[in-house]
Amino acid sequence: LIRTIWEWPRETLYRALEEAVELRLLTPMQNQLYRFDHDSVQQAVYSLLREEEKIRLHGMIGIALLEREPQWGESEGIFDLAEHLNQAVTLLVAQGKGRLLAEVNLEAGRRASDYAAYDRAIQYLSHGIQALGARAWEEEYDLVLELSNEAARAAYLTARYDLMERFAQTV
Image 1 (cartoon, rainbow, N blue to C red):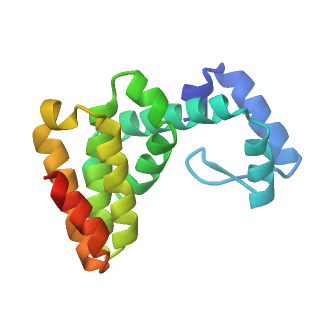
Image 2 (tube, one colour):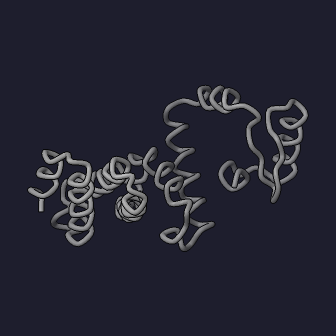
């Protein structure tokens, strides 16, 4: 995944990973996976990125995850996928991927509702609606209808009737 995102030659990547392991910044896991030894190391690295780099990075990670998991709607990784893509919403919408982003958020919202995580469901579903833009009702009627209905249902189940009413009125 790292090599795909940063487009580094294999040797350069492995050398960098070996150095990070030697410095005890990363711990190798199975299947060529690595994790940061401490959250503070990950946070420090992330804080060094400019905002546009963070957006680009999240977008690239999200797209790489989509490509690695063609059946993303059936995957438990749907939440990670939605989180990465949502952090890159401006970039993805500008690239014409608003519908894809809305579909991912619809599935994440449904899955969150299945786990009774209704507040998270509302967040995902709201992101999906926003990703479709101002002309959603004219251009993506069925999708925005599903997003709005699911969001109204989740709001009802959390007794947030004002929010439920707002979603229901758009329908």
